[in-house]
Image (cartoon, rainbow, N blue to C red; front, side):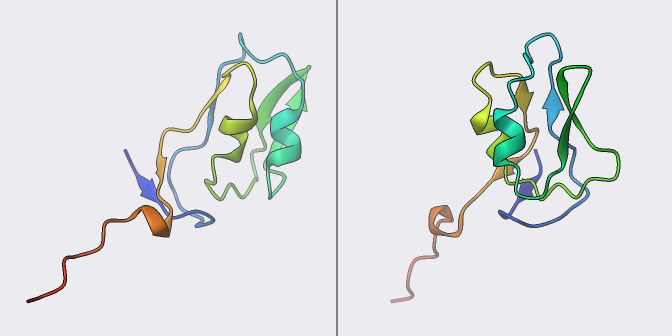
Length: 86
């Protein structure tokens, strides 16, 4: 699983959208900081020319669990720090 720092653009996979679960509510659209998502025929889709920064806000915003981000976002305060040398 790729590890991406929040806000970092990369070549990691796009968010995966289960069209059978998406109801087109648009909650994910309002949370996406770059506008990488759109509605197509009443369902969410990633824009082909989108700049997804892999923040995973869309995944968290989806009330139906239709979006899965196949990468892990690690925040700086969650990274284990090395032990101080004695």
